[in-house]
Image 1 (cartoon, rainbow, N blue to C red):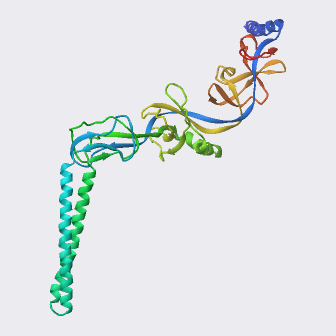
Image 2 (spheres, helix red, strand yellow):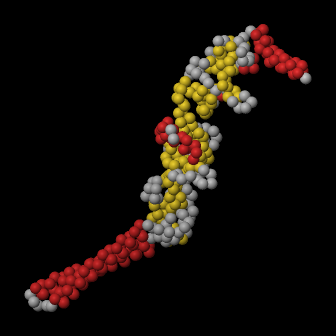
Image 3 (tube, one colour):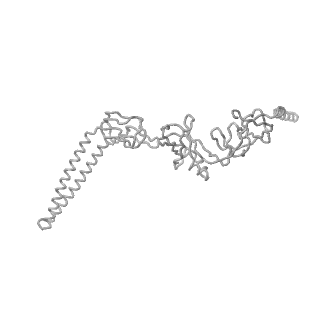
Amino acid sequence: MSLIRSAAGAFALLVLALPLQAQQAQGPSRVSVVTAGTRDFPLTVRLPGRIKASTVAEVRPQVSGIIRERLFDEGAAVEQGQPLYKIEDDSYRAAVAAAKAAVAQARANRDLAVTEEKRAIELFGSNATSAQKRDSAVATREAADAAVQAAEAQQMSTEIDLDRTTVRAAIAGVIGLSQTTTGALVAAQQTTALATIRALDPVYVDVTQSATDILRLTSTPEGREMRATGEARLILADGSEFAQKGRLEAAEPQVEPTTGMITLRMTFPNPDHILLPGMYVEVDLPQAIARNAVALPQNAVMRDRVGNAYVWVVDAGKVAQRPIQVASSSGNQWIVTDGVKAGDQVITSGFQKTAVGAPVEIVPAEGTN
């Protein structure tokens, strides 16, 4: 049995040595390399989320009546205070006229009460009338003053109702479809909105991240710095990157007990209204900084059977294997924090014709001069 094992081991060594011996007989293989350079890289995490309008206002009537006219185009931008609907106002105009008449009558009664009060005070001063009549005249004038104030308040209330027959935009934004038509009866404070206005510049993106990850990242000065000042990138559903950069605006000050996640809110400028509420997006959020790291093409990094990453480098004209530590990805590159140093020549092509320990010749990559 030991003889069989020895023979099998010798055969395996022979099989592994054959490619290297064959290559040495044929001369050095040609490989392309990239020379490693170190710099600081921001490490990001990609989180899914949905677009939300920064402000939403539902348009509702504050007085009852028949819709006489719609004053906006559906889907158009509106300004704050812009008229949107006109409610029939004949009865409200009549109420204002009646209130103005009541104010005029109350003021006339007050003027008469003021005159009688002066006369009563003068007569009391010359002992021509009693103190009771003087006091009664003063009380009548004070009641007349209160009546004027009540009439003026009623006039103000009717004028407010009249002004509210013109339904205006509470915020600036883009207005949606009208949920009512000309001739429809609407009621004050009804539950159904006439339309909805959404502010689309900027917009919010709400994402969730593990509370454990946030705690680990915010426990270091670098992590806190990146979360405070780092810009977030937005990836659209088609895989393209949104032109505008966003920032972390706020975090929900609680952890969801069932998931252990915290909701984070990003703000993104949206001047062209490309981002619409409800759109699915992904956010690349800065988490930390990898100091003196190396960016390598993804095709240069290989993994063994247990998933450990490594690269082949050219060392003294031969292929050498280096285990590496991959921290994150950036586009089509891996960010490597250990195993490769500045100046190392990392092989990017020609793997199939060489092996560890074999001599190689460095040639320019295809498509380069």
